[in-house]
Amino acid sequence: MRPLFHPSVEDITVEGILHALSDPVRVAIYADIVAQQCSQNCSSFLTVSDKAIPKSTLSQHFKALREAGLIRGERHGVEVRNTPRCAEIEQRFPGLLQAIVNAHAIQLKGATRAKQPTAKKVARRTASSK
Image (tube, rainbow, N blue to C red):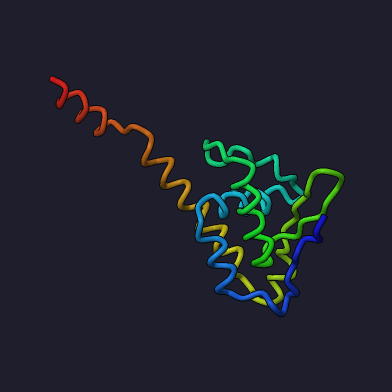
């Protein structure tokens, strides 16, 4: 089995981080790993944001996060446990990851509110069905 690639801290770039976190599934995975503050195995993410993710796709998401330097993956038997590299990246780019994770949380709250029916939406639906 090939060893997992992890870039050194000096090789981590802002562009690489932003590219890795530009995908909604990857940013959701990363935010969850950061929030748990402990290692997570890949199979914990077979469902992300109420969507089923195929294992092959999930592997590609973790590879992108790992190669951007955002997580460290360690093999334990047949599973890979992933931990965030927040402390290392914080030293290189102070405040960057926290800003991204906070923005993701704000975005999720807005999306949740948009999906919830409000009195105006219910009234419009009722009026239009008559």
